[in-house]
Structures are given as structure tokens and as C-alpha cells.
Length: 398
Ligand code: SF4
Image (cartoon, rainbow, N blue to C red):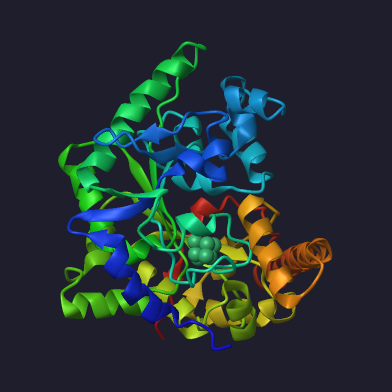
């Protein structure tokens, strides 16, 4: 079967994802992601409609006493630790994104950015609208990611989004204060789906935040397939000119998901005719616009990873020092996707899932070894040794 063209799909998605100044987002009420995050912090409503369009996810559970208790893990009390001890602790966790905000002076401590407010644009251009659509490992359930206007999704205005996270922040602050804790969430994460399809909405939300003089910082997620779509939309007047440069004036960082390190690896992961050229073009576009990016890699082919790093480093200085491989795990939505696929192929679901997990694990471990090897030979350092928010990425134009 022909693989879906993600550029064409993004163009189609605009028709359902955007309605006047609103964007279609997931209503988390009946989703597994919603249920999981609300174990610690309740889902938060759109203050105008009462629909639950925000969740707050505690990234590193051990840093948050309520999350540590709920998840049965040991609480790491930062009030008794030095900055160095805190960083060392975070560095060894799987996910070190919090340290990317460590230079923001107005932040009290890591707790301010360990728990982002998350909204999810309800469609992805790697998703074909069917039960097996999207990246195999995607944590988003199909209904929240198929771009179809239906129950479980709702439209959201930028002003309502900002009002809602302000209200939620105060409520959460009070809950934590009752426990003697000072929690002042600062991060507004626009995720998905593929939120860059709705960049105009995102810029308007940040304008709202800027106009109100609020102290939020942002995380924008991207699957790195939309650089050329942004160009096209600017040309056609769908997006205003220099939209990314305008967004980069706000304190927003981009979680750039590297979905493959060779064309076959990429297309197999995302089930779509994505190209390495577009992936690289999209990374460069974010960097040229002035963003700090977090290159998070998923399910790389260890056999081609070394040469991918060499190629990328010819274009972006220090690229390999910033790359992080995200471990993949089985979770409700991706388990369901794999079960459907097994049925389609006439295979035993359990065995099929086991085989897939084995492959993910092997690519993760093999990939980490390759990065370690590369960093040692090329940069004389080790993987995960450096706090990566300190390392600058610069485009090598010659
Ligand atoms: S790009 Fe992200 S949202 Fe889209 S299918 Fe892949 S993992 Fe899911």
C-alpha cells in the first residue's frame, strides 16, 4: 500500500483542525492519558465551556511529593539539596527536558517547570485516520489524534486557553500550599497531534500571554515534517509571514522529535512517506528562526545512526551533544494499535507485541551505545554526561 504523504495530510487537516480563531483539541475526560495524569493533578477545564482540555503531567515523579506518593517512588526533596545534587539527580533520569529551562532567572526551582500544562491539537499528519494510524509507539489514542471533529474533541480559543491555565495554576498552587509546598507551574506545552499545523493559533496564544505580561514559558512539540508546510502557508497567506521568527520572540522551546535516522527507518516508524530531507529542513528552520531545540530521537536504526550524526554535524555544530534517545514503552494506545495491526496481518497479538517491544528495546540500547561511541570519538565526552541546556547549537552554513 502507498504510504500517506504527510504534507498533503497536513493541508487536509487544516480544514478540520481550525475553525475561525479556534483549534480542535483533545478533551481528556475519557482518555488514558487524562486518567493517568489526573492521578496527581486533576484535569483542567476550558473555563468558558467546562470541557477538560488541559492536563498537568509531572515529568520526574520523584521531585514531587504528591506524585512520588501516588506512584510509590522515593521522594527527592530538593529543599535539602544543592543545585549540583539536583542536577545530578535529574541528569540520570530518562527525561532531562526540565533542565532546558534552568537558565530562566524568574524560576524559583525545577518544580516550576517539572509539571507542564499540556493541551493536545487533535490531529497529526502522520495519522491516516484509522485505528492503526500514526507512529507505532505513539501514546496518543487514535480518537484524539485522527483530526476528525467528533466526541472527545472540542474547539478552543487562544484567550480561553490562557484564562484556563491561569485559573488552573492558582488552584494547583493552593492544593500544594496546603501541603506546605510552593508550586508555581510555568510551562505551557502545546503538543498533539502535530501542533505546527496550527502555528497561527499558537502564536495568537503567546501574543495573549505576552499582552497580559504573564510569566509562562513554552514547549512546542513537532514531528519535524512541517517545515515546508510553514513556507507554503506563509506564501498562501494562511500563516502570516515569518511566523516562526515571531513565535521565537516568546520564551518557547521546541521539542523536535527525530523519527528516524535513515529514510526506511523514518518511514517505518511513522507509517508515512516522510523524508530525511524534510526532517533536516524542519530542524534547520526552527534553528534559523531562533529557537532553542531539544532533539529527542525515537527508535533509531543503530546501524545507520553513526553516519546520521556525522551528516547532521556537518550542518549543525554540536548536534550530537544535544541528541537524546527517548526510551519507548508499551502503553494503552500503542498496545491497541499493535493489536489491530497483528489482527490485520493475521498474527498472534501477544507474540507480535512482544516482538515489537524487543525491537524497540534493542534499537534503544543499540542507539545509546552508538551515541556513546560517537561522542567519545568525536567530542571526547560521554552520553548524558553534559547538562545539555548549556550547549549551543549553531548552523554551519559553509
Ligand atoms: S508524530 Fe507524534 S502525535 Fe503524530 S503519530 Fe507520531 S507520536 Fe503520535
